[in-house]
Amino acid sequence: MRITWYGTASLLLAEKGTTLAFDPFSGIPLDESHAEKKPIPHARDYRRADAVFVTHGHFDHILEIPPLYRGTGIRVRATKTPAKTLLARGLPEKNLLPIRPGFEEEIGPFRVRAFQGRHCRFDRGIIRETALRKEVREHPFHMARLLLYGRSFPENGEILFYEAEAGGKRVAILGSLGLDPKTRYPRGADVLILPFQGRSDLEKEGLRIVRRLRPKAVLLDHFDSSFPPMTKRVKTAAFEKLVERECGVPCRALPKYRAITVKGSEDDG
Image (cartoon, rainbow, N blue to C red; front, side, top):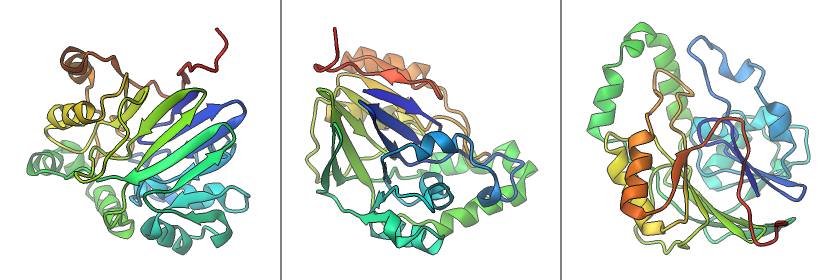
């Protein structure tokens, strides 16, 4: 199985000619005043997906889905709230497949299961730190635009945790740094893809999730600054060492645009 990260929580998983896209989004730079009208970088890569999966409805997970998949035969799996947003923003109903926690589907060599997830809670520390950034003062109108996007793209508590299995390997995918306390998640995935952004206590919260899910390896995403000044690039080295020391499993930040191969029992050699 090959995993390619395109920034934020945007991923492509590929196995034996089948490709799955998760939360395709390329980012909004500071100088972008009309984010929905800009050409979408790597659009060709996103459109080669056989299926699209949405973890939740925030703009940094679904903003670019309507222009990417309108006029294609590719269907987008999403819960009720993001599905409603996508329809309102021009994605045809034929391109939508409504799903909920408990959903399971086989697509080519992949088996995908959806579980109830939870969005990270923005604590006072991260809110204060963001408000005090110099870039926020220097770009107030852009920051206001991002806040408006935030209000226009609700998630309504509908967060999905996905497990994708293919080639004898299991990959657990979170769209945000949080887990539902009542859900029994599958443990021991070969790879956990962990978003590393959104809290002032990232290391504590991230370690709690790794301990609960007990993966064999951890790959970090969402640590980049894909829509500044609301986001900033987060340093990951200390957390990588912490996970390796406390949990005994390898942890690394995903490289952008470069496929990582997760070898399974069905791979040659």
